[in-house]
Image (cartoon, rainbow over the protein chains, first blue to last red):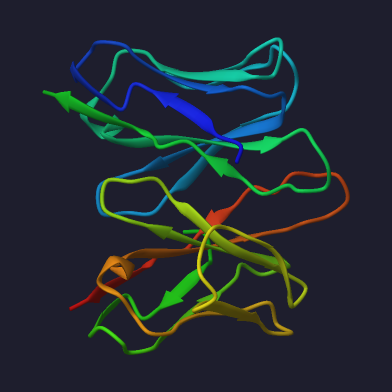
Length: 113
Length: 115
């Protein structure tokens, strides 16, 4: 079945360093969503990207959707300990009426104070 | 808070037993999706219910079944529990309408342990 690859699987950074996670699909996507899951918690919606080349910012977080709508990235500037958690991308394929989210495996971020 | 609630929060069962998990969706939402999340893994799609009918299913055996009620709340039933069914079960509510793509709002999950 269709897959969404997310890299890296794990990332350790020092507080203040930047962090980026990437999400890649072999097929064109209708849109992509990003979620954050804190340890012991449940996924929380962060943002949705729909347009080719779209860039959205939320404070220190920058989200991009590729021109071909096959990849996306989440970049955190100057990480803080509150950024700890697993970041998931979840994509909706472009084909048909099936709008089920296809989830990446997530990138777990650890931040050393 | 998302307004999505799940019960119970924790559950311990033994192999072969049956379990029912419940989810109350966010007000105004008509779609509920169920996910299984094993420790350290991403959510795995079990199935989705839209207006009381199953609207897609992931790679889970028939012993995983569900219901959606007229008020859009939902149940997940698992029969003949196996050890590998131990996981966090997440319910996500969303509004499916026209061509819009549905942001999913997750409940806190039910942690199921099968012994």
